[in-house]
Length: 107
Image (cartoon, rainbow, N blue to C red; front, side, top):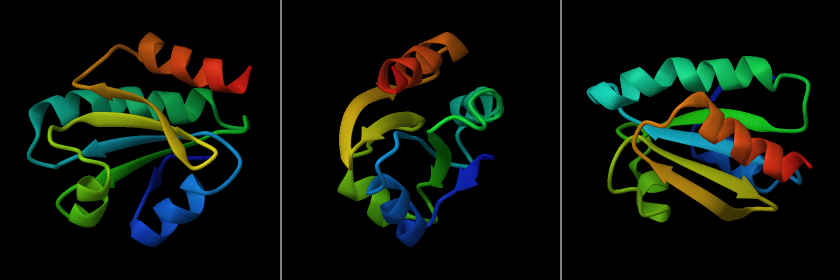
């Protein structure tokens, strides 16, 4: 599945599914978010066909989602499993950090 750009309704559907969901909370004006973007896109490509959803939430377009999850800094990447948050990373991390999170939920 390709990278998904979530709105509130789409996010809620994905989060409530029975597969893990990795979400990058970001903003267009955020320099570190722009640095992380290619990493998230690479994850979406690498994990295509696996039971995982990878997406992005623009906090300016969806401030309700940012508030709901207490996202105070961007980028913030949250991993959800069975509808609940299981891991959170704030700031830019390398590809391997996110891949380990995903691999841990898929094993």
